[in-house]
Image 1 (cartoon, rainbow, N blue to C red):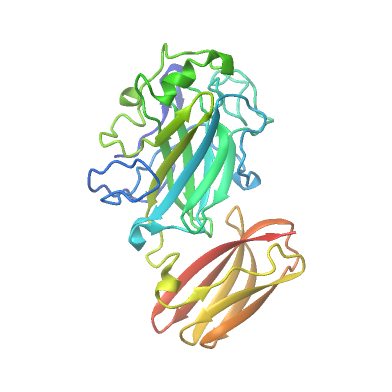
Image 2 (cartoon, one colour; image 1 turned 90 degrees about the horizontal axis):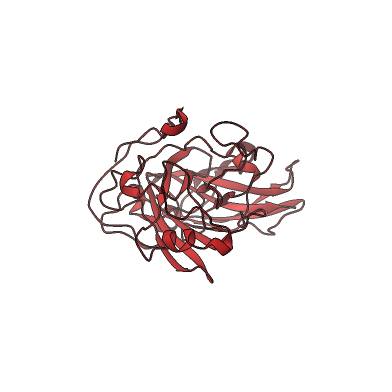
Length: 337
């Protein structure tokens, strides 16, 4: 799938093309759940469109509804690393955003492109960091649709240091009994557009060349009970990424206490004498502190990380180990109170 420029032709708007890693296409397996597809196809790169989150680091949260009403909706996204045997990518930063039931986005509006002005609110936007399974989860409402686009969710994935790995979009299954059809008939929940004028995936200029259904998620549930989306996205992550330390008999533990107030301990077990760097990043990917930079002996090590002026909130600590076997990196999330 080639990267495309998003065009809202009816409004004469050209979305900004965003640089992302080169795309690898291989195999024909359809991605339908949180497991591994046969050929571990790197997910297609797509434009972030005209409505990206303005300051995504401000919206680290699981519940992104922010007062919007509609059919209940949960989103589970698994991030897997093509360059590490398609294993889970822990510590990746994942931003999502989508429109409300009426097809409007927060943080934008008051113009011909979106007449309703939502520039001062931030609904249906969120950021999470993947766990050991490569999973992020969000609570939301089922997206609506707008002219020229099928129902969709935007996703931007970064590595633990904030470097962009992939910008993509998630499509929804369609058909008579699909969630899209059911929800858009749910007028009592405020979905008033129906399907008249809806742009289907086959005619959507982002999803139309997805012949293998790679971008289509699994969506299950009902209008009354809510729907749940599950989707796996494959990225070109680090060649020796998360999990490599354990595979090489290295072990990075979770800091304790966590949350920390004044200081915390980072446990690190080394097979060999190694050069070690421990850096702290905020959720926007900015390096804010170097906790340790030097040599450590083989065996169990406990490194003290002092708060050193860190504000309250979530951070990632990234440990880089260099020794006779090569260079290894792993990240974990911590909370400062």
